[in-house]
Amino acid sequence: MSRRGRASLALVILAAALVLSLGLAVSVGSMAIPMGDVYRVMAYELFGLGDSSTWGSGGVHDVVWLIRLPRLVLAAATGAGLGLCGAVMQAMVQNTMADPYILGVSSGAYLGAALALTAGAGTALGGNAMGLAGAVGAFLAAAAVLLLARLGGRSTPVKLLLSGVALSAVCSALGNFCIVLENDDHAAAALVQWTMGGMGAASWPGNAIACGVVISGGLFFWSQYRTLNLMLLGDECAGTLGVELSAKRLIYLLVVAAMVGVLVYQAGMVGFVGLIIPHGVRLLFGSDHRTLLPLAALTGAVFLVWMDVLCRVVLPGNEIPMGILTALVGAPVFLALLARRRYGFGGEV
Image 1: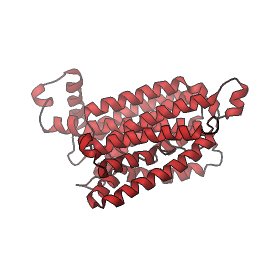
Image 2: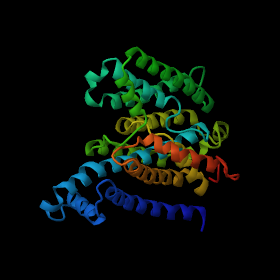
Image 3: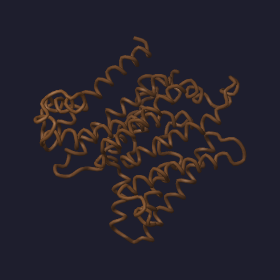
Image 4: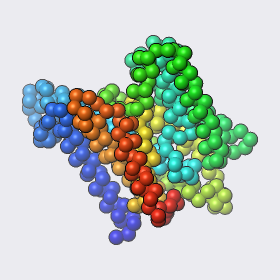
């Protein structure tokens, strides 16, 4: 079977795996629920099928529809968004170490959350102060990197990386300085908890926004797969073909920052997903973004669904922050990918 044929088959398998994973993952937890009951509750809520007194209320309904399924849907959206953004970022800066939080985005989110905790912004923003301020900080940091990268001429991958490293250091230092000035152990603990990520704050209205942003961003980037493929070849090569990548790179970074900002607001900062998922998909199916993007999205979605399950069940009565498990699982996988001798960034386009 050709590489493209294998990719098409993998898309079908992953889509089916995501649907099955959602149903199975909902049934797993401190309160075991038969999968049949899970699908009956979902059928009632989505299509009005079944007895309302049995499947429209009660303990099983509340656990399935109000607690577990919302967080799993958010996990799927977050995994898909980070997988997409990771693949795009790696093409933009031509660097296998790029992920959605590169270029100061994560540090900008950290600074925004720190300001919300320590500068009185939380009172104005309400209960979602940290998440909202983190999302705004992520987007503003990306915009600042764009401005810095354009100083002295057009932006290049190297200038974007260097600007991101510099701004990241500044934002991290300012965020830490805010915590030191506040001298509040509770604020520091809340900030650390948020930076490790988690799906505990999931809700259906929030999920609708996250899913809408991820789907819209995914369709946009999929329509740009030819340009993303050219980015792997470099600006000079693309220039000989009559394509100017500098302006495209700026647009893509703003879209990535907007997507990451929404996901940061909903789920905090979840690391390693945007790094290892594109690596693994590229290794198996090549670097053609026409197939790489949807495969990375579906793989990231399935991966985070099961990471959320592990977060809930590994320590009975306690929930592990998502970022801890993704790092523990992601780091060995990343090292295994690096050990593959034939692995290369450009791959087969």
